[in-house]
Length: 95
View 1: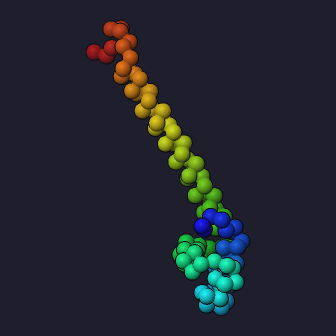
View 2: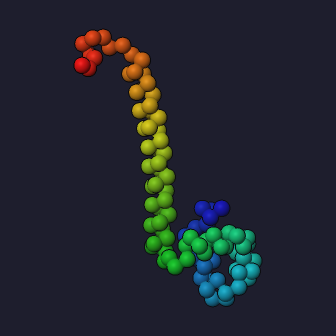
View 3: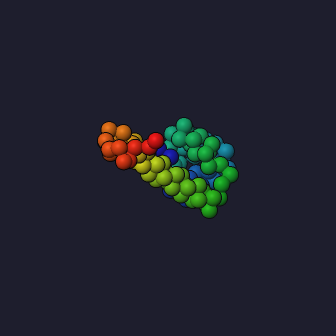
């Protein structure tokens, strides 16, 4: 749910809360649930636009790299299994 908000909107929600200090008012104004507000506050409170953007880009990069690692691990497992079943003859065996 948090991912659907732009960086600017997240900061606007938190800024509005800092100004009025009433969660119900902020939630009504932006059309969000209280739990969503508290998740935003917990995760993004105290950040400026640059830091928020960098953090979200790093999270996207981390997700991309995790997928690549998962794919490479699967490929490695498949290749390892194929090599263990393949008979390369006596010239290739280790002593």
